[in-house]
Length: 607
Image (cartoon, rainbow, N blue to C red; front, side, top):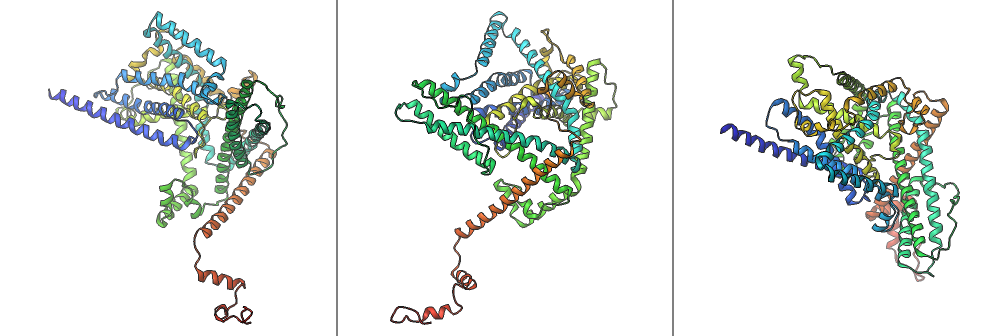
């Protein structure tokens, strides 16, 4: 009886701890997404992304906990039914909800119905076909037949993509840490990247300028002769979006003149008698404006991130450490900015930053490179052992007790998922999608990032369990053992040779050449030449120097504006105003005596 009561108490306490942990994961995810997402992101897209990221982090945090509970033989809190519920919610999000929301965000239209009608026909056809196939499978075999196929197909897709991404990440992450420890070597790569990124950034700005000019021509032809409510609403929304895009273009270019506008084919003014084609054309133009502004903002964010890295590395290379004023302005969040105003905290923070940049930074990065390199070697060795069905051997009790801990499992799984997800942002297929700080991530990028993580985290977690060879089946494995059974689709072992071959190609630097031979350049990663030409380095250094001067001028101008605002906002004492006038020569030294004299008959003061 006592043992049963103790088991019940342990179960209740474990369930409570699990619920509190899930709540903390949700709150932490909300804080992170709030830092990245734009204010214009709709509540439905934000909540969907929040749920997807939260479930992914939940899986990454609690799979190691499930392993530790299984090995320790304690009362299990996470049961197979819990994992199945989490998986199917994540499955519906990443395969149904996110694609539909992404298409809706990219659709052109002024109303909800209009944007639905303008969805691309191919996607609607594919989803209709998929829905029809799912209904047929449900009618014929039921959920027991459909579920293994869904699990297997999702697993196959995730392992195909993760084999491409993981093979690059396992090699590139240690290299990235090692190169960042050397400012000179990293600056060469960044200068080369600055040339290509600046060209792409200017291209997006020119495209935005062309679309704005085309919209300006359309709004200039607005006539009240054929008044229609839908047409007037379309013109009003187009005008509003055009003004926002003009402000964005001025912000990105600092008011610099762009190239002359050349009207695109088909942008000649048209006189349409029917209202519906006119509204449809304005909706397409409105969608082009939104898409061009999004692309321009994404390119500008990447450019700012690259310039920040270049400026930091140049300062470190020249031993130009930040001043106490610069370090006190790092934080923009209210409470931290208020803390930095305290003299003691400001001084301590400045010393920590200087100590990190001058002494610790390159040492910590070297250690991180060695640690991640060791993790990559361990993961690749586990892949080989999984493929060859080799036993891990009998480890010493001390080493086994060290390895079979929740922290070690969390580090291994986190590194496996982290390197794969990190590589996804450097994949050319991703384009300009990414997470941009300071609330610069649009809804499309946010949904894409949530989709990629949600599709990869569950199959990679299952693959991680196969790599570590847990002696006892965990609740996670019990729930998803059907992932490799019940269908004729390939298993996890089939993709290990693909992964090893891709890793070998990245080590020998022949991956890009093979893709060029096969005309598959889109599957390549945004890598930069390790030994660029002198002309490219000079051009990249010039671009960074121009950006440095521009930021210095903007900072000086902002300080002057702040000083003027402070002077106009506060009242200057009268004696200080009089002293300034005397110093400038406007008032005489004996102004008080002169002011106290009586005026003469003509109303003038005596000399």
